Image 1: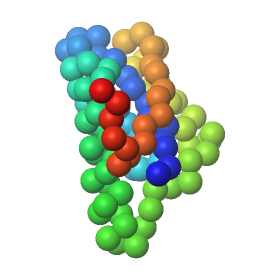
Image 2: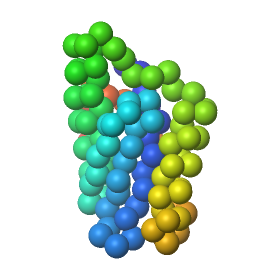
Image 3: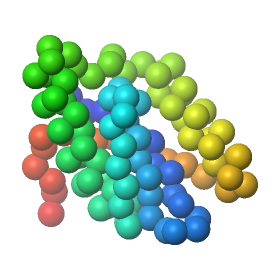
Image 4: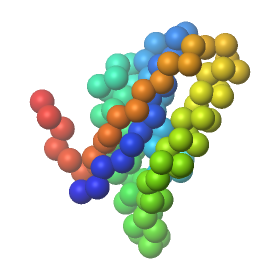
Length: 100
């Protein structure tokens, strides 16, 4: 199964993380810890892909430009909120068995 880059944004006020998936517009999630945020994001990605495939679609082709644009959007939001510009990327594989 294909893996996708995700963008994690820590919330300095509430704690936890928000996560977006550039190749799957609208696929977002969150979690109290990095691990739970990534697990929740895997679930969101699986649901997104199931609905997209029912409609004859698929994820967008993941390019450097697509990921860079999402990072820029997240950094812009963080700057507008007065938050530090700390973000992280990770790679998530939907439908993969999580490692215990």
